[in-house]
Length: 78
Picture 1 (cartoon, rainbow, N blue to C red):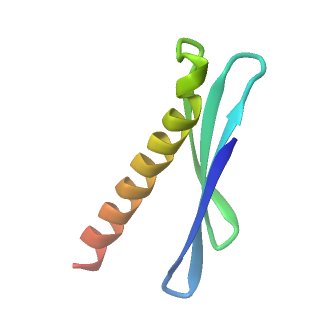
Picture 2 (picture 1 turned 180 degrees about the horizontal axis):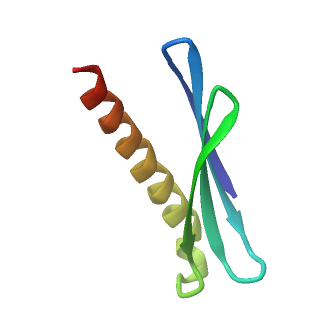
């Protein structure tokens, strides 16, 4: 369970990868890569999240990080 998006930023590729891990406890990690180099990792604990809502939470966490990055890039380009 997870998501992967990649966009071109200038001459480099920005990749946002969100994965679900079940051990040791449920959690998601979003990794940000620029030009293939890992730049940042965000983690969220999902131990209290009901199982039917896991994919929705993975999707929304991923989208929040994508929106945050796009917003930051727009500010930088102005």
